[in-house]
Amino acid sequence: MNPRRAFTLIELLVVIAIIVILAALLLPALNNAKNDGAKTTDLSNFHQIMAAIHIYTTDNRDSLTWPNWDYGRPMPNKTTPPGWLYEINPSASGPAAFNAQAGLLWNVLHGGKILLCPMDNPTESYPPDKNGKITSRAEQLSSYIMNGAVIGFRTGYRSNAPPVKISQMNAGDCLFWEADDRIAFAFNDGSSWPLEGVTARHANGATWAAIDGSSRYIRDLDWTSEAKDTNKNSLWCFPLTPDGGDRVYGHDR
Image (cartoon, rainbow, N blue to C red; front, side):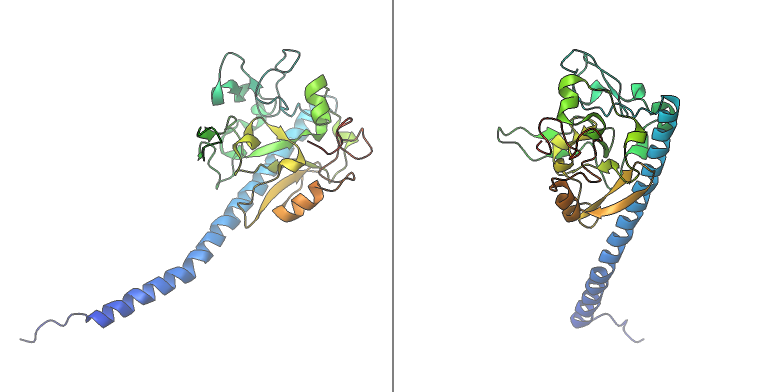
């Protein structure tokens, strides 16, 4: 009988090399496909969030929701107004303080996956801070945050200003975006300044939604450029000031 032929060492090395090369060729394509799928999901999520916003404004005399511009705690006047995402529970701490079912859009959206990017991990731990403390996100309900322009940014927190009417804003004004997941503080509440930035998880970019219900992708560098612009634009869009920023501090957060 002929002995069974086995692979030589050189043949095994060639096979392994071919597998490595194929993996190197396929992995980027797989990652791109995963990224494209996540972006598509984000854009779909934003369409549904904006539909909920328009339903809310129709039922509430055109007024937009409170953006949860509250630093995750009661306002200076001791009130805890419900916002688009949650209402603060002063008797709880950490993520438990963010009561999603009391949010103004809960009856339409019901939270969950519709508020999360498939590539995001809201419970992740961040590197230790300067005191050696490992941090995590306070608000873990959503990958998306609302533009503080609807209440005039910092002025809104200090004076508890009511949200503007949706008809006062322009169709292309940015209302929601994907927060910068590299920074835990970006999720201290449910809204932000444009200068707090966006995620770069989608090939160095993020998705965002406009007043007219549209949503699109934007590179983080383009976002930063517009956020640093001192004129009124789609990010700095508070309708009651000439530059779209805070009444006192302008575009300075």
